Amino acid sequence: MKKHYVVLIAVVVLILAFVLGGYFYKSHQAKNIAFMARENASTFVRDHSPTAGSNDAKVYIVEFMDPACETCSAFHPYVKGFMAAHPGRIKLVIRYAPFHDNADYFVKILEASRKQGKYWETMEVMFRSQEYWASHHNPQPKLVWKFLPITGLDLKKLEKDMNDPAIAKLIEQDLADARALNVRKTPEFFVNGKPLPSFGYEQLKRLVEAEIKANY
Image (cartoon, rainbow, N blue to C red; front, side, top):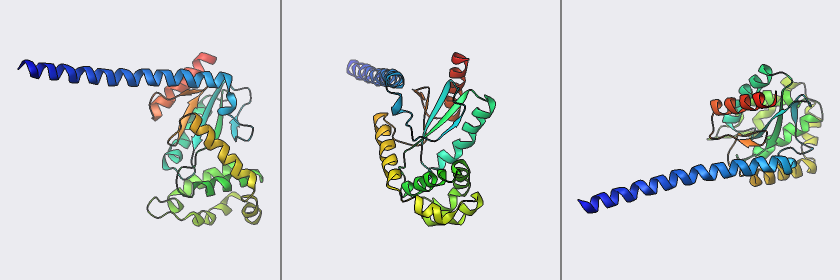
C-alpha cells in the first residue's frame, strides 16, 4: 500500500511539472515574440506584405495564412468583423505560410492579382470557391481558374505575372519569418506581436479587444 502511494505521488509530481513547464514555456515564448515585435518588426511586417486598414492604426493583426487552408477561410470573416467593429483602429497584415500541397500556386495567383489592383477581391473569390479546388482528398488547383473571372482580372496577364521570380522569393521570405516565429499551422495570428495563448475565435477576439483597450 505504501508503495502504491509513492507511485501515485510521483505521478502527480510529474503531471504538475509538465503543466508548469508548458505554462512557463508559453510565457517565455510570448515575451520573446513581444520583444521581437519591438526590436525586429520586419519579422512580422515586410515591405511586400499585403495590408488592409488605416496606417494610423495602433493595433496590428498579423496573420500567417494559406489560401488552401479551410480554417483560414473560416476565420477570414471574423477578422473582417473585428475591423468593421473598430474602424481605423486595426491594420491587417497578411503573411504567407503555404503548408498545403500546391498552396504556393495560389499564393502566386494572389500576388499576381495585386498588380491589377484585385488582391482582396481575388482572396474573397478563392475562399468562397475553396471547397472545389482545394479538397484534401482530391486537390485540383487548376479549377480555381474557373472562378477567377468573377474578379474582373485579365487572366492572360495574371498567368504571366504569377511566374515572376520575385513572388517565389517573397514566399521564401515569409516562410523564413514563419519559422523564426515558430509558426507551424495556419492560420497563426499575432496581435501587436503577441501570439494567441491557444487557438480559437474567442481567444483571438479577447486579444484584439485587449489591445484596442490598451492603445485607445
